[in-house]
Length: 181
Image (cartoon, rainbow, N blue to C red; front, side, top):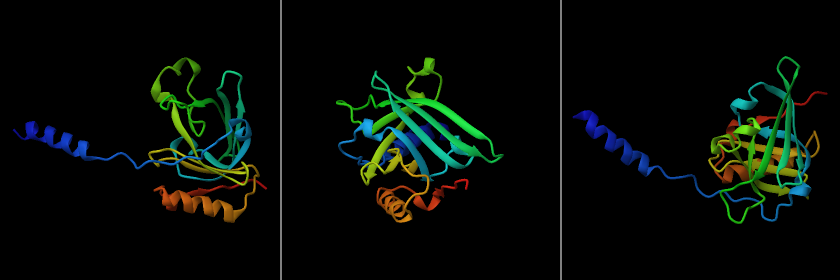
């Protein structure tokens, strides 16, 4: 009898869980201006960057078909280099598409039809005419502060992290960038 009553109780609890509050994004994003090289200044810990110890950068290049070529790389703990190639696109969840709400995929191209290989990449805030970018996911699990320069203005980075805190991101868990000299 306990098993029968436990299932509805769990379903009721799960039904009470509320989705994360709305995550605002930057209006008027120009993906051509966003393209180029970005250097990571801070991030929330994540499994796919666990091997990265520093010099994290991302290169974005628009393609004629409207997608974006993505190349991420970092210095590993053993002083090697880890490189990941992927693809970005405007999220198919929004009509009309919002260039600030992107999806990225690092899985093989043949898997691109599977929704679970695409991850959210939302441009939350741009600052100083595309010199700084705050990027995250609506579930607040992932967050990055990026800059065009390898060494960024600490006050700008701190301001973006303060803004992320107001949006509910756990910025007390942030990993700051380390670059090779």
